[in-house]
Each structure stands twice: as structure tokens, then as C-alpha cells.
Image 1 (tube, rainbow, N blue to C red):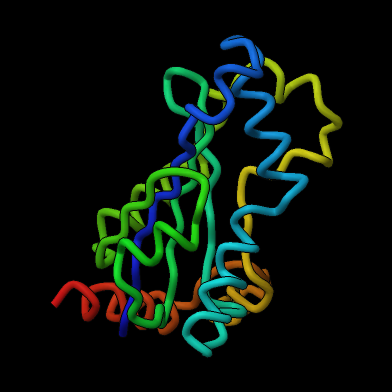
Image 2 (tube, rainbow, N blue to C red; image 1 turned 180 degrees about the vertical axis):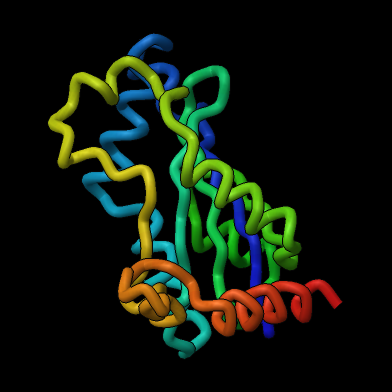
Length: 171
């Protein structure tokens, strides 16, 4: 299957004249959240390709050491779009797209469990308003109830299918 690992990064140059350097990380974060940049990126990809991506992506919000926001995204069944076109569709800075490898899934899983490492301004926001992960509706349809009845865990079969999809995309 076609699984992509995309990094979406912001270009700060348009804002440096208007926003002080110490306020820039929070400004970019607030703007990305209020304007739903990641979700709208995928809506524009859908409009460009005519292919639905609902249920096909999961994004992880991270901050560079400088404090600037970027996103890592895993996308299943990503339609082909040239990288420069995707960058234009993103429209907020740099975009990098690669075939997903197991190391990318492991990287995202590691950050799923990681706590801390976020700028101080995030801890001052209402707890329910901060979303570190963003997922398109239906992404977890591969999650099945485990034999113990706990939802939210991958069954052995689903884990193997997901691993095979990622490996196949690397071939």
C-alpha cells in the first residue's frame, strides 16, 4: 500500500516584521489551530486529486528547539501529487514527503508516549484546547477490540496488516 510520511514546516519570514521572536511560536501555533492548517491542507489535496483522504491521515504536532511548530503526518493511500505542488497546496512553508518506513511509524509511536518537551505557553492554555495529535475521522478503523475486550489496541492481525502496508510502501 501507499503510505507516506509528510513533514509540514512553517516559513517564519512573513511574520518576523509583525511579531516579536519570543511571541512567534505561540502566534504560529494559535494561527495553525484556529485556521485548521493541517485539515485544510488535506481538503485541498482532495480537491486537487479528486481522491478522498478521510480516515487516511494522522498528524503529530511538534516544536523545533527554536520553539517553532511543525507537523509529522502519516498518510495511507496518498494520491500522487508532485512535491512542489504539495508545497504550494500547503502554502505555509516547507513540505517534505517520503515513502513511509517502519522507522517513521516507530518515530511517531515514540512521540505518542512521550510527555513534556512543549513550549511553556501550551501549559497555560486550557487543557482540552491543546491537541498534540490530529487524526482524520475513521483513521482508527484498523483498531479492533483485543481479545480482552479493551478497545484502542491493535489486534495481532491488524498490527501485521499495518506493518505490511508500511513495508510494501517502502518497496
